[in-house]
Every structure is written in C-alpha cells, then in structure tokens.
Image (cartoon, rainbow, N blue to C red; front, side, top):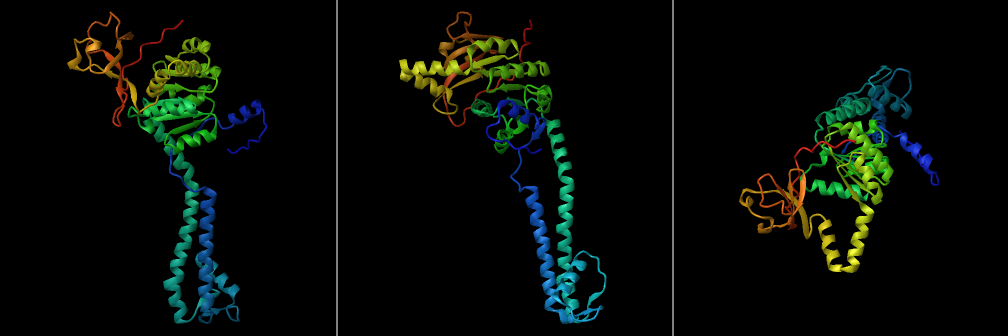
Length: 371
C-alpha cells in the first residue's frame, strides 16, 4: 500500500495515514531491484533479442523467400523475427538458401529460446513472488520462539537492541514494531524483522508473535503510548519480561501497574547524570563509561561459581555491587547476604573486553501481582 505524506499535515491526519499500513510484516532480506525495474530490464532484453534477430535476417535477406512476392524488406525482417521468436511461424517468409537455414539453426533458434526464457521467466516470477513471500512469513512465524520484541526503533530502542544482542542474541530473534514504514525499513536493513503498525493494538502485537516472546522492550516516544502498549502486551503474554522507558518519573508507577516489570525514567536519569557531572566530573565520567556498552567498565550479571560459594561479596575478585537471591536484590553490604550460595547471582563491575558478554537471565519470571 502506497501513500504520500505532505509537509504540514496535522497530527490527526498523520495518525490516520499510519493506520493504513497496519499489519504489514517486513523481514530482513537482501537488497533487490524494484519489481518494475526488473520487468523493464527484461522487456528491454527481449526487445534487444528481437532487434538482433531482425538485423541478422535482413543482412541475409537474399536467402529468404517471401511467398507474398518481392524481396524481403526491413519490415519483413522484423515481421519474420517476431513470428519466429514467438514460435507462431506462419510460413509466409521462409529461409530458402543454405546459408539462411544454417543461420536459423545456429543463431535464430538459440535467440528464440533466449526470448522465451526472458518472457516466461518474467511471468513466472511475477506470479510466484507473492506466494514465496507468504511462505517465507509462514515459516518465520512457525520458527519464532522466545524472541525479543522491541516497540519503537528510536535512539532508546536501538541502544536497547544493541545491548541485548551483546549477550549473544541473534538478530533473527529480534522483532521491531514501529508505526513508521521508513523506520522499519531501517530496522530490516540492519537484519531485524519489522512490523509496521500501532503497537497499542493487539492485532499488531500478535503479528509480532508477542504471545510467544520472552522479552518485550517498550521504547516509545510518549508515556501514554507506553502505558497502553504495556497493558496490551501483558494481556497477550503473562510470562514475558516487560521493560519500558518513560520520560516523566510520575508515570513510572502507572506503567508498573500496567504490567511492566521494570521502568526506566529517561529524563530523570539524564538529569541525574548531568547534575553528577557538574558536581563531580570524574564521577560523571565513570557513570557514562558504565552506560556505554562494550568499552571501559561494564556492569554485568553472572552466576556464582563453585569456588566462590561460602565467601562474602568483599572476598570476590570482581567488584560486587549487588547479590540476587531468589527474587530479592540485596546490596553487597546487606547483612542478609552473609556468604554466597550456589544459586545466587552477582551484579559486578568488570573491565570490558571484546569477548565479554552480559550473561542473560534464563530464569522464569515470577508471576506479576495483580490488584
């Protein structure tokens, strides 16, 4: 479906226009030529074969016999090439000399086969393109399990995807949902599957197979949109881990009530970093280093190894920030930690290396409390 967006349209017109592209799924694929360009190129090739055949016949016009009388003109040569290449063969113009017949065997007949291949190939491709795409989508949906759905492919969404993929998650396991077709084109160009549509609508999220997703990242531009998306996503998938970003801190509790497991307040976090950088530039630099994935210092979550069992967090080689025990997150100096257990997980600060990855959490999420 094609539509034109004119500059100066108001928000309502833009939203109505975006609803027209709801339910469109785009999968990563190699850059191919536009179908109209492919057809035009093949028609040009077929026309070129026709012209070459006509010139060959006209060059040897004395070796052809026209049953209508008279010599073979240039128009007759094109007529003969047309009926010959299309396998019509009326027989009114025929090769009479041995040279003309040999030319037909060695040159005209291969050109006839090439002409048919070009036309038939174009027709078959036009007829089967839609079927191939439907098969591809069906196969994609049937194999998609425990994937990550990202709502919004702006700055926050892109950064979230890069961080998640740093754990070893394949790009084929990431589905991006965004109302902008151009944004989804950018996502598919990077290797992610994309859904063009409004994520607040359940049918759009079903297209992204949200009910089979393991993680859902909500990185929309508006807080009210994030709340609606969280409500819809939680209704479709009770067990998925849902994390969301909001601009205003006052909206964070509402988003948690809507079903989000974790909420990040982007505006207050940025303000906190700005204030820290003013009071202590070095501390701000360290915090910025921790935020940047894959360089300098990284904050990672990992399981406790056997050699660390029975030790306190201070006795661990890595710099331990928190200990995860069951569903509780305890500070490194919390008396409740005591000594480490084999089932604990540690949140540590480590020096980032090219091979270091954040250990993904494969434990099932506890059931969300409902009011």
